[in-house]
Image 1 (cartoon, rainbow, N blue to C red):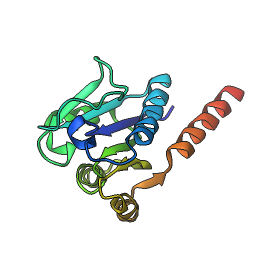
Image 2 (cartoon, one colour; image 1 turned 135 degrees about the vertical axis):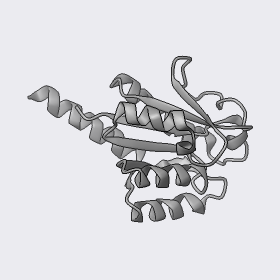
Image 3 (cartoon, rainbow, N blue to C red; image 1 turned 30 degrees about the vertical axis):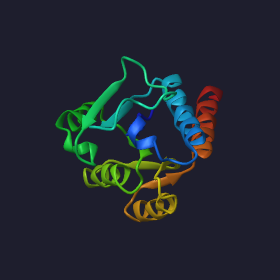
Image 4 (cartoon, rainbow, N blue to C red; image 1 turned 90 degrees about the vertical axis):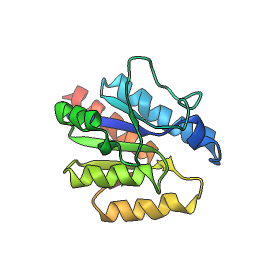
Length: 166
């Protein structure tokens, strides 16, 4: 079975403060978190220093993997990079904030480190709305696979059904 890791980047009180459409954004991320938990796939939460606690309603649990970073890319945290090497994921599934900063920096770092990246095109965002679509284009041109939340969940569900039908 393919092992993917869900990365949830900077969904915190400080980063969500000025985000428009918070509830729909949070709903999409939580649906991915639920799917990964149901399939017993790893989830890594990344927090930006000085941006407060996780945003209320984010489905984070006490025993989840959490890494604190001071710079935009999560790969600047040695223990984060070591954890990925240990888990050896087939793909990193990237979500979170901000499209133009930490999501972009972490995705570029992942690609440079030869990880296959799935960027969930509607589960990352920015306070400047056009930046999400701009970075979807930029990051897909660099090698990230784009997919919408609903399509990702549908594809996973149909893959599970194909496995159980055999």
